[in-house]
Length: 238
Image 1: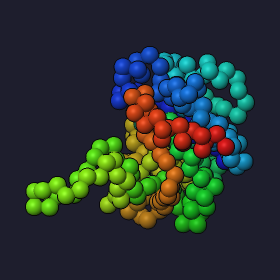
Image 2: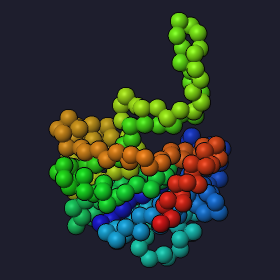
Image 3: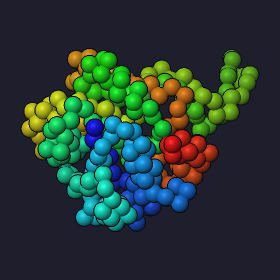
Image 4: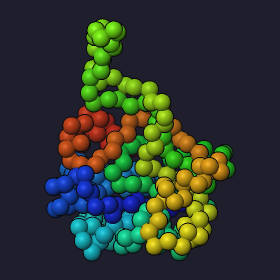
């Protein structure tokens, strides 16, 4: 199986830092963030190649320079045609794969890809998306009765009414043919492809349960959640 890491975003939420280095190269404990993801993906025996998509003609060149000619990693220039367009751009590299992993680089999570793959196959899915149904809040909450605060809850873990979708997917080969059929210059995977598949009942969900996850959108987020980040990278260094 191949794993695709999308590392070509403009990193607008991470400015001004991402004006000097790509989000993928955000340092965590002395290593770039993408390194934890690549090593974690490589730790699964069924992942035999990692494809990194980024703007290697711009700041993304720092990623390529970091890895030089490391075996098992292929670098592909961002197509500038949306997430779906990027997958269509590497269609030839995926043509022999029955399924593949798609990982957005700002997602940190020691997700059990073996179990996720099991759900993908069991549900006969076209796509399987990592989800979670609870979240630890960053602010304090209060229980209010008749305008009076009765109790404080400091940064509680909240049960979500809707499952939150994370940026880690397992996709079937039919996704590529769906993208091709759109015949658009720019294709957003979520809105243009997955939305319709959900209506057809072809997308399964893999709940990460008690596993920690963080959207590493900027160095500030990582710093503010340092304990959680350190816990996650320790789990990823298996």
